[in-house]
Amino acid sequence: MSAHRLSTGNNACISIYDTGLVSDNLHTAGTQGFAAVLRTHFAGLLALALILK
Image (cartoon, rainbow, N blue to C red; front, side, top):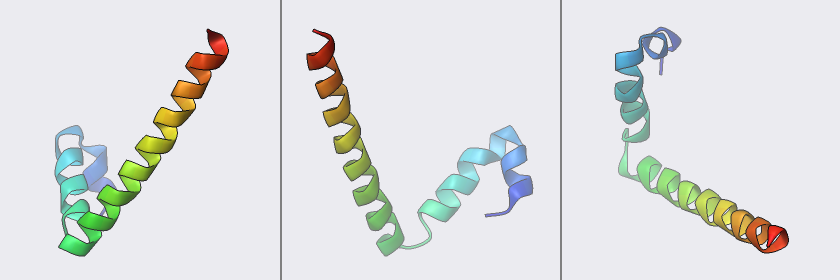
């Protein structure tokens, strides 16, 4: 991923897809990592909601 592509707003998504979908293994690892972060974040929000209740 080159930095100058990110500076142009329209190509930012394209370069993210370029790096994210380089290989199936990379994509799978990224998806699993994203899911783990999402679960952790959701658990944190749930705990926060219970605390603030």
